[in-house]
Image 1 (cartoon, rainbow, N blue to C red):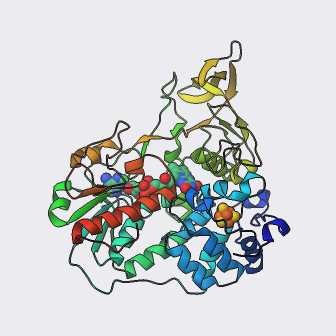
Image 2 (cartoon, helix red, strand yellow):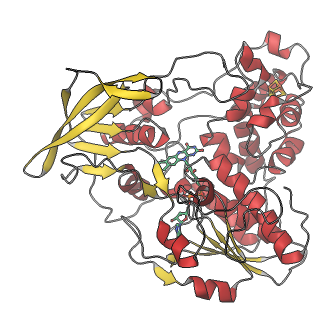
Image 3 (spheres, rainbow, N blue to C red):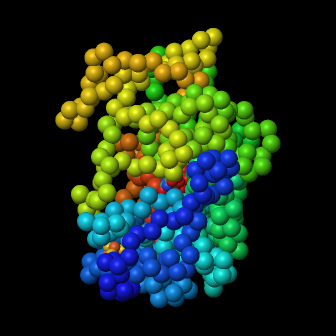
Length: 485
Ligand SMILES: Cc1cc2nc3c(=O)[nH]c(=O)nc-3n(C[C@H](O)[C@H](O)[C@H](O)COP(=O)(O)OP(=O)(O)OC[C@H]3O[C@@H](n4cnc5c(N)ncnc54)[C@H](O)[C@@H]3O)c2cc1C
Ligand code: SF4
């Protein structure tokens, strides 16, 4: 354990960040990891609970009390070994995870949680800086070959685990760059993309092959990569000993009200990746900007918040975010500890400036000459989980750009249909996560993991599923597996 009285003596410390006016002028990350001394003090706050509830909140089962203690003792090398034993990519989760572990931390009952995410961030950044993270190529090759379809965090974690177990792994990605939503969803100001490239370098050195611009079993959809070369499921099944489907949940939820066809109404994912491309230095990126516009973001989650941050960086005239549900309470403790509470979450993008409005229903998009000009909306009343419109509460708000960020319905069905994979009632690839043959779909030797299996979720869940799926594939191929569960 860190310091016996640490949690009584020390306060939780937020990571330092650049001032909100100056950070809005660029797309770089603006949160600094803790210094060694700061991390030591934060590690000292951990009580090393008999039952570490933090771990039950962490989807990858990070061994949190251990690395808190190791950082308190300044044994950073052992800390990164502990962290990497459960999580392939702590530099991603240390930046973008909503940290369910912290809501589950025992201190959260009546105090501020241990700053677990900030400690994770400090450990992994230091480990890379010190040169402690290198390729771990397998000592032997099995001669088996696995195709991974989709290069988001689920596909990457799965590919890395399988390559380390000695299998020949090829990752097929329909986009022109690897990374899934880490690359073309999450903005650079939350997570810079050289972090993804650095991991890819490690994975290539471990033997993983990446084939970008290859779309498996479907034609590219929406703003997808029209240049992608089609790859048939039949070919993959013939050439590989196992196939992992980790193509994410890319079908966005639409808002089919009157005026939906107007120019200037876009899905968030037709807007956000364009900025990631510009930051990456791409030329001829489609001209869709929020600059000088009255932007209305519909949907109150992470994706909506990313639209807010990006619109402010473009120089929008105003940014408003609508949410259908009522405003959750602004809690400073967790009343449903150790579970995940519904509470007001104010992201760094919200802090940079946005009008947030709750219990709002969109009635109509109002246009002029085919272009969006305003939104007609109404206030809602929620009773016993049911909503009704508040009479006389309709209002009209000017809007030149509307971004739909209401979540994702399911994976694109075409790829699942092309493999003939059975689906669950929500249209996800059906596969269990326990018992024998977990992550295996209804089609022999075809596995599924990440958002494609569980539906729209989080980076940390994708990493967990990728790791666990890798173990299941390894067992399937070899009859046993030494990969962690
Ligand atoms: C804008 C946005 C912001 C988010 N922010 C956060 C956050 O801050 N924190 C967090 O924890 N989570 C966040 N999420 C959720 C998180 O990014 C996802 O849950 C996670 O990336 C899912 O990982 P995945 O590997 O299952 O799929 P994805 O990351 O979606 O990757 C799937 C990949 O498969 C490829 N693909 C799909 N079909 C095919 C095919 N047929 N052939 C070849 N390739 C294919 C896709 O092009 C894509 O690259 C965010 C999501 C969005 C949309
Ligand atoms: S629940 Fe909190 S205090 Fe207890 S071991 Fe985990 S991080 Fe430390």
